[in-house]
Length: 151
Length: 154
Image: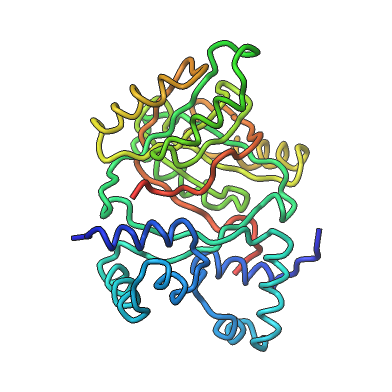
């Protein structure tokens, strides 16, 4: 089980993932070796799975981001699997989520500009299997993006 | 915009899977020296392409069993200030992301909660009471998968 110290460690690492272990130990009033042991344990128990670089697709030249909310034809028993397998083949799809609710699947699609988006939408999205309906939300701005958990 | 080649793409792909890999380990994989790899990573960071790193935490093990996406429509557009809404919604700890969108909704929120009862509490006490919040649509997340994106083959 996690104790308060584990939570403090995770909270601080989440807030500033670039902080070095010695700096973090200093900040928390721990010795470096004690902190390292704690972090190793969080890794072993699978609470801390790793660290990933965050790519800013806009900075890479992908100015357009669209959220496609899709309902599928559920009379087809393999609709979800076949749809998702096909969506994975589209390079510009950066996120695939499934839901319980009015929406079945959401795809995050990025494109260099609107013409590029139109091309992806027509030639790759609309040809995906078992689509019943699609709604698009065009991304304007990311107000909060850290995805922190309130640990 | 800086020029990005195939090796940069491979470095981005590798770091977006595991950001703890050292420049020398990555360099060995892509046939580059440690300093050359480090310079490439530095350049991607300076250009803002690598925007930072984030922890990959097992949210279930931390007790957050439910993730809900909310589409929020502002009730009286023009009369509520977007800034006020954005500031208030961003301050809610359970709200993990806030995106301003165009379409059926004005904002898309990612909300985490311990369970459905906890989610209901957040929804009623914090989201529905936001200045200007109108229609809210909730979809409970079942699975999610991040894809590598258009970073070449391999």
